[in-house]
Image 1 (cartoon, rainbow, N blue to C red):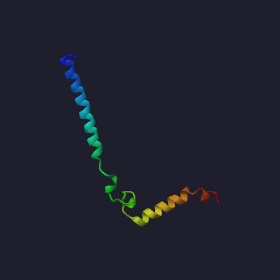
Image 2 (cartoon, one colour):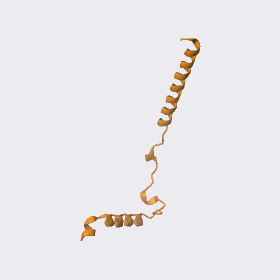
Image 3 (cartoon, one colour):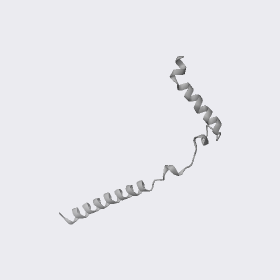
Image 4 (cartoon, one colour):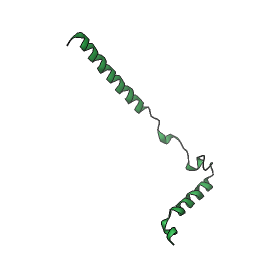
Length: 71
């Protein structure tokens, strides 16, 4: 190999190594999704009303029950 080819291969290998390291660091720095302590009724739709959220869930379950719709 000539000196120019050796230098180009070394640069390419170093670039690949740096990209792999950067991807590895990005993957390791993800935030844990379990850090947040949000409850389902804290959503904008429910507005923080736990009782209303539970009532809506029960109503949705009743509407999805095929047994109730066939009687």
